[in-house]
Amino acid sequence: MATKFQKIAVLSLTLGSIATAVLIVFFHLTPSLFVKIEPTSPECDNMKILPCRMEDTIQSTNIKQQQRGTDVHDDDNASTPVFFRLFFTYRYFEQLTMTTNNLISLVSLATLLHGHAVIPYVHNSRMSGVPQGIGRNRKLHDIRYFNMSRYFNINGVNTVLKRHHHTPLVSYNYLTSHCNKTLDVLIHFMFQGSMANKDAKKWYKINNKILQQAKERLAENGRGWTLCPFIANANIGQQLGKFNIKRYICVDPTKFQSVDKFAKQVLKNDKCVGFVQWKGIGVNRAWFNLTRNQRIKPSLFPHNEQLITIAKTFIRRYLSPAYIAVHGRIERLLIGKTFQIGIHHVRSCMQILNRTLHRLRQQHHIEHSFLSTDLADSGSDTVYNKYYEQELKLTKKKELYRMAMAELSQSHIFNASYVDENNRSILQDNGATAIVEMQIVSRADILITIGG
Image (cartoon, rainbow, N blue to C red):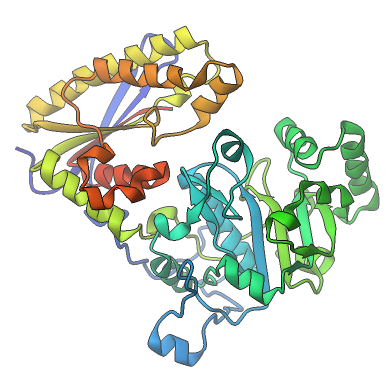
């Protein structure tokens, strides 16, 4: 039987060829991971650029609000702030964990600019600034996005933000009412990379010549921004609910590492600010220096209590008293390969995993195991969209999943049919299901991770 202290075994299986390297490392895991984590007191930045004290801290609530707790809006429990600017993002980049990380960087930027970020909507692990959604998901399905409270406890999120000296999130309805359905400026960041160019031409219905002319203006004027009236072609104001947009501009993100410079030269006196897309900070992303703010990890954001309860119930019914969890990032073994080669890689990986699971069960006297993978319906949509473009359809992904499960014996998977009927509606969203799986994985006695 496993010891009473929880352990995690991290197994990395990299399949560059048939030969596979296996490494298992044990370390203790506290049961509070992802669950009601109270943020620790702010720590100094690792680079020691500034003293361990947040300068220009923005008080987002008045004294009465602090005494009675967080005041909220009725749609998604966002705090009511005393603010200077509001920041709205139409498109968010990437899926659940990474897009949450990008949201955190947006909040950090908004804080340094004396403002607040607007809460996004969520659907199938992705985020959108508007409830009707954007992009490929909207084209493939007739859907609506949910309030972010479906994934996270918003009051808890705002508590984490404030304890780390960030301004709290505000609701979409608050943006609408305070800004009087007007954005002072809508900004398109000219991110680097061929995909960014392709997206810009598609979103704004422009040709390469018009896009290059905008880039040339950016290079010639030396300001780092230029007027881009073609952004209006995306009809974002209409999708916001007939918003008036005063200025459309393109910004070269490589020219603005300084947040103060961005405020003085681009935003000026603008109070209601929109971004067409926010990709966070890094290579082919924004270059803002956000080290003046305390860093926050997505794992500090408390999840929806109903999802936590669903996970605990599943563990009690099917996995107690102890279990091994496997988290598989299978899509990285497929991207860039033909379908048949991808199947060979996945099958080899699962066979090695099965042998490892058998050994660990015997060694630690653990009967149950649980599998969470991005091949499931609640997993990543990257593989689906890649094969969809190649006209291989969703059935190929399901075929891979069935094959992977066939190679892996005696492992439980999470399915909404195992959940009490009154809790199933929240699991219609794949992102909510992914969070339940995240909760189950985080509570395992041993954790194995595989893939890229």
